[in-house]
Image (cartoon, rainbow over all chains, first blue to last red; front, side, top):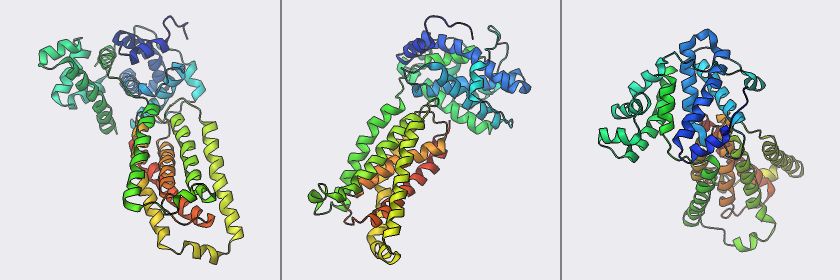
Length: 182
Length: 210
């Protein structure tokens, strides 16, 4: 693993828990190659695109379960535990059995940086199943890079309402994915 | 959707989240108080309660409470996906073994006829129903709190939530129940708590998956 920079992942996550979006985006960006490395090491036979689907599923899970990390604990063991659980689950749902010994996870190298040429399809499909306004908010903020305030102004909603809708959308996404993939 | 786009969308969702431990700390006292109030209103406390609470039969309240506290400690650990919970699980295990030891002692020192007589009361079935009813709200609260966590084993985590709730339900019910012998307590309270554990496991297997 490359030497990890200042600020630590723990510091980024603590800042994220206090509402710091940039710290959170930075953390998720730093975590993604590691998750991708684990997913590809385990499910490389599925092909890069299906692997990226699983990577996105893990990221969504990290997001929805982040409050189960205790702020005084190191982040990596938590992250590996979440990733491992979700990767096993995701491959099982796709009919592939994978085993990931705990010790193993920590040793997997992250995927090379800057390599994300793949448009994962599952997430787009599941977003398409959301209620239209929720789907629009997710796309506006994710793909078009709008802020919650901008999306709100365009859709005639308050910024707070956009955030609530976004939060609900992610919870629904996790549920919908489970139903669609199994 | 590209992963970068997903990250941008996720990062915009900064809704504050409540940790499972904090949720347990918030919901359980409320659920406990409501259960006590339900007992006061619908079951009534035993008339000699003041006396009982300062004498040996108070064990019927203390043992379930101790089980509930141990289960609470274990549940907090299990809500974290990376946590090792060997110490917490051992405490619960030792308490369970203690109950089994007491049961063996009771079976050895009481004839089957004596035990049958102790249990030959409508209060026995009453206990098996009342404890789960009084445990329902604590169970709902515990499972809801665990949903904020990420337990690696949903069924086991549900069972532990069940023990936590069953312990509370049994402790509350003991304020009503007039039967104090060990060989009444173990089958009635033990059985009732096991029912709640089983309920917790079944529900947990469904609602604690992630």
